[in-house]
Image (cartoon, rainbow, N blue to C red; front, top):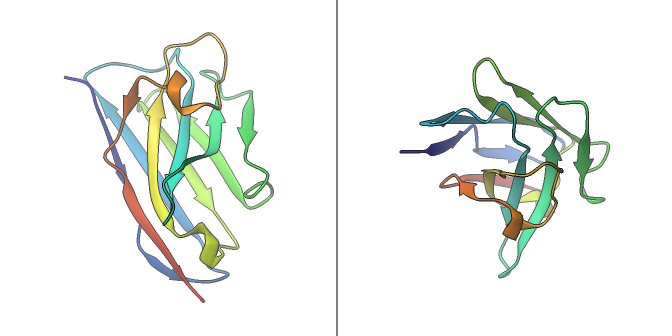
Length: 124
């Protein structure tokens, strides 16, 4: 059974930092792109960041560019999201996902495997 399990979400003050981690089990994703999405108070799932299987290609949403960094450790089958200079508008449930793709998709529908999410709350 394939599982993605996120951790690291918590309540933090604006301007602070958090590091989210996602551990995969049941399948290795060392040759697959992985990404982070988030869902705030609204209904839409928002793309945050994605990384190629090698880690050499990364994409970020404009809203987090320069503040968030995605990375991965293929030996440990994990992907992480370092979040700095957090803002109240970053408050959301953050999901990691894995895609079976040759590219690095930024669309949620391209991702096949999803974690259950971790809550990040940024207070002003």
